Length: 120
Image 1 (cartoon, rainbow, N blue to C red):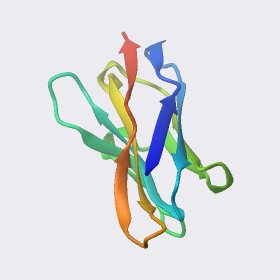
Image 2 (tube, rainbow, N blue to C red):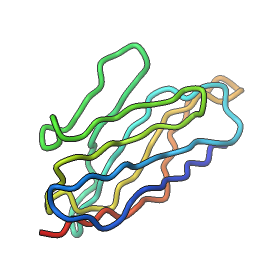
Image 3 (cartoon, helix red, strand yellow):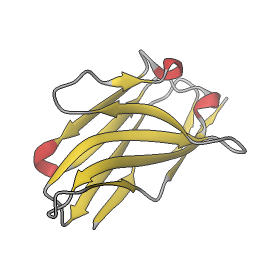
Image 4 (cartoon, rainbow, N blue to C red):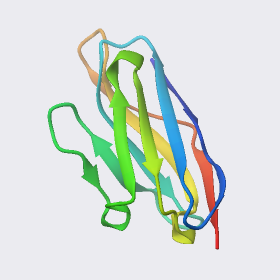
């Protein structure tokens, strides 16, 4: 089983910055794809950014040039640096990963979510 713990959400003014972190722990052979998703109030959860080792990162069009995803494989931790934040970025942000278990199977895991609120 893999546990994901997020941190870094909060309240920020428009134009400000925040950094989200997600740390994975538990029993697994390898963390594969990691990513961030968000769910605005009353809307569905959508992808923000994903990263897989050895492939280009992927970003939602709405955050390109403002957000950056990165990962520290040694710490099993990944980050989302959010700059030039806008009120429409307000959402609950979830981290997600696929992990290879010791039995060789891959599974998807989600964090508990962290609130990001951008005031105008």
